[in-house]
Amino acid sequence: MKNLLFFSIALILTSCIQTSYYQVFTTTPTKTINPPERHAIITYDLWNNGGVIVCSIYNSGTEDIIVDLTKSFLVLNGTANEYFQNRTFTTSALKESTYVSRFVPTVTSAIGSGVTISDKKELTIPPKSRIVLSQFNLVDERYSNCDLKKTPLSKDPKSVKFDRENSPIVANSIISYTYGTSFERAENEFYVSEIGNYLMSNLYETVKPDCNHKYSILRMKQQGANKFYFKYSGL
Image (cartoon, rainbow, N blue to C red; front, side, top):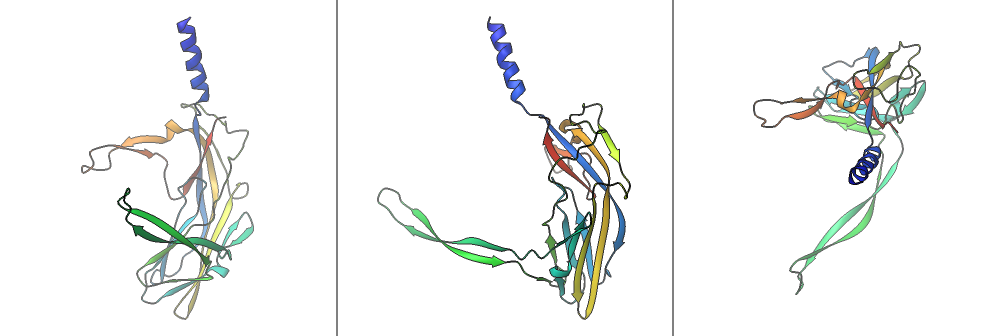
């Protein structure tokens, strides 16, 4: 009877544990228009959950770069999304006051007041510095395909490949800026060329960074700036 009860509890606990899976997207560039490196160096990193496009713009010159967000876009499957979103944010500016109590030696309270911040149409990058744009993501749900098993076995991961014509995602990041009196327009077009579903344990490996680190760390095997992933459960 005790063994049966223990087995039932173990079965219930096992059923409550959600197995995690990762859908990994690989991208391939199709068109790249780079600005003169004496002006700027623009790089992209997609590696995160959902494929948030992280665009780093480094001013390698000697004059300010003015990025025009009203003329900068992420074109996703033919739809242009302007980097200038015309948003406003309200934050709280906290002012701390400290007083002494007989029973509590030091008490700190916060008095808040609202501060409104609006999106800027232009961003200035001084020489030898950078800014990072990261406001658009590529996916917000798992890509469904009959050739992709939702819950793949650890020894049998599956993937499907695409060309530009049948890819589910074709994107082009356009950055417009001025350097001195020169107007520049940089483009980075790419498409998703492969999608694979993996059990979480299949994607991680144990590595030791270097001789200065005592402990090993977990690292994702397929990590790369041209890849991103979407984490989901098998339920």
